[in-house]
Length: 487
Image (cartoon, rainbow, N blue to C red; front, side):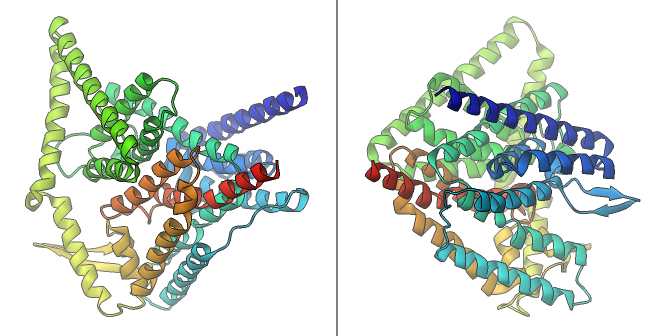
């Protein structure tokens, strides 16, 4: 027993050291850029920490993406004024794969390799992507860098799906991975506070608004919080938190973060995801969910009342004006959802989708290929836009890889849901987690109708991760049943 405790303490210290050292290097790169020396330091530290533990690599991928977002997933190596798009995310993924392969050779206990219809269909989708990429290289209008970047998001980052189902082999690892997501959500609260103090969120300049107002939280952080809220909501309905009052308060802070991010599609996605959870519950749990919703509304009203009273009592007119201004901006942003005719971003999307449709009609089966541009005409404005920037991922796959590509992608999603449904719902202990994960998968697909989520690695990887987490239920639960039976 003492040996086990000592081993556990060493593992925890090892994990903390990995987070501290690698995070410190990312922070330095944020300010100084990813120079060869900094890049080499990151690679060496990653080798030291990741090669002995592929699972640690998986948790670092999740947490660092959610916290550092583009500075972990899109920070390029700069060498003699040349930019090489090799990201810290890519390094960790590659090392996690190598670590897993090493563990297969040195671990006497065999791993359960899951490879059924979902995995076969995913391979077909990857092959279609490869074919589209090579076909695009023969076209003089193809932008090679854009084509390769698109290829990475569709064909290389799905390796995270396989990593999850190959690495996460038991309930303990499964819960640790989910806890990593939840704890990263807690860390994002820091960004909400910073945004409130500064009057503008960190890294919000990358996504300018088409209406009045400012973002107090970056759109990517708000997207991550959406996933965290769905998982936490499912868990709280099944009484998986020791203090509901605390988690209610935290969830509302997360919701405030989403609201102040000014991302309209996330405002729509949150009730969509919560409705998915509600529909997946049995009647007795649906009643709990309604009680949960009622308590949250009371908490929200109480917080609003306290804020108003504090402003009145302490005569904080400036703070009141700031709060009032933010609410007014949110109101204007919300109204713009209904009044699409006056919104430039909505008109831009509609015009781009119509132009994309015309291009696609020339090759509906195989698509127009990767790395192509589309002529966009909105009123008197003329421009060329990248196909991958359609702000509708499902449409982007269809345009680039045709009916063949979108069919393979859709069948893959459906096969994962079909293969995992009965198994995931059969385990009372893990069922709350899987309900939240299913809601996350469907909500990511919903969000992808409004933004290029699957064309951007810092958001797209979460679809592959969530699908892998759901799919690995077949291994975890079957293994648990086998162990229980043998005992």
